[in-house]
Image (cartoon, rainbow, N blue to C red):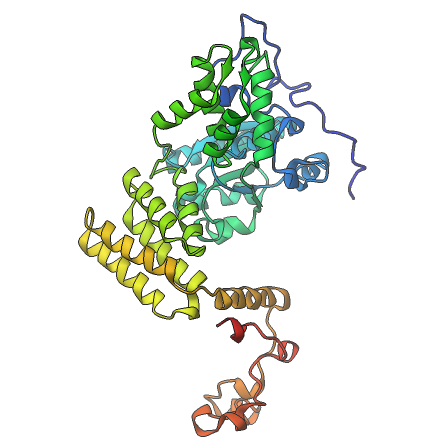
Length: 435
């Protein structure tokens, strides 16, 4: 039975010697490091964005209030608070916090930390939170190493990923975790972060007393593309050069000379590939070519781009242009065969074709609706006349009885044939009016 909810969460670190406990800093003993790290929220109430998770009615806040914390996967773009929330969970639950990077951690590293967590839990009932950044980069064997300890509660696993967990995390681990989707930070929330950093004298830039022009603020928000870390990095660079006010001209100069924040082996490709796909979907060949050029210039894997084109050809073009998928497949083969630099021509050709193609997501929507019914109704009995009857017993039981072989009948003869299970017999998943 749930205990009554307290009105608020306790301050992290109360009665806890964890190194993440909130500290007081004097003017001469301030936290060091980049502004984005210094301004990292220390409580859930300091979080900006992700109201659906950490707001007053947020599910994550409720889990912490009721001491029902379990393993979770945070899925979302860079700079939206995945690492921060993992650290805050450790603080509120007074758990030991261990951070892994899936890029550098080995299977031995995992097993060693799992053993330590097991020993601590057995001896002192001390919980351990294992935070795995970029968990989608772990292979199946590495992911499986967490399973026994996740199942018995020895560890709380928190994974962070920019990739769809359904495809990148094995089903056994996913079934034992809750998936929380994190959204890009909104413009209004980015504005709050910027003003907080400018005003905060303890961790931010408050002692500089800098003003910020409205247009400069707009440019920072626009350039950050929903990533709070990028916004604070730009703000910090500008503050180091400004005299009394951060001007539009200064931000313009910084953005012109700013190194492209794009790591083809990390997470920074997310925003650009998203813009590319949305431009294709929106039938804008000019924007499509621009974002394609940005990715190629940044060193993105051309086969990664080609794979996304194959997906879009079915998801967004579909039956409106049945030639789109063969075009995309041919492009993927051409890119693999030709390689860069010439493969960019193949990619540009396909991108323009898909951008100009008629669009229909009717088959994609239809499949999603069918999948929803499959999950809601589970194994509905298949009509008996549709069943295979390879044995005499099955035939006696009526399997396949009354089935009409479609090639032997007219459309009029078949118009009342029923193929869906009884409970779903009137369902229409595919909208033929939308192709």
